[in-house]
Length: 317
Image 1 (cartoon, one colour):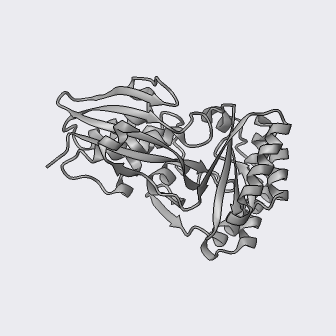
Image 2 (cartoon, rainbow, N blue to C red):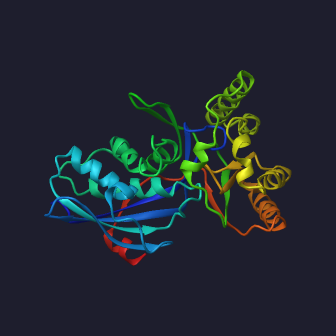
């Protein structure tokens, strides 16, 4: 029997993972968005209740990532019915935590569960990307694939899509601080140079290769060598003046690497489990010394992607 309502939970994400601009993403289960989709006879996609970190979101399909993702899915299936989406925002917006992607992914997964023949999770990627297009056009894949599939995900090719989950190194956790600031993705992308020196391109390739090899082998030395962004971070570090001191503090405390999460302003660090407490304390001190209020989050690197949850659980959260 096809349900009339379905609910899905999608995690936040760490886009780029420092070195992997637009190609690497990591699910970050310390925060989630939840979307309840209610089947309706009238065609179209409508916004229902909004709760959580915000109490209002745009009601137009072209201005709301969740609505746009659901609309794309229903169009592909010849609009067999309409839907009303209620959204609980647990992922901060404009924080570098993939808030727009989480909404799009949760929405498309919830609506998919109402279809007579649902798509496989990986097949929902193009519809979630259409939702993400609302926030940034062309839509970056890193947050979307991570929130959708979970773990560490590599976008190896966009057309035709080729996405690969990478092994998560054992005993590594992600510590993240969200400062009381906002960074719009479009703005953060607009300041990036279209050209970089050959030496920078070579060094960037070296770091990406080291990071992927470190994930695949569990080699901590390779992870340390790879988790250094020489391509994008230097062009954006002025957006958060505290970044340098926070990175230095994290490194001194034993972090494997530290950088912006996505386009920021959130800052993440990877650390071995035994070092995570000290890394978190050091980063917190650095933010305080800089006079910046920041909220700490922590999650294991191998976090799950989107999942269906009972509607009753979603309503009670």
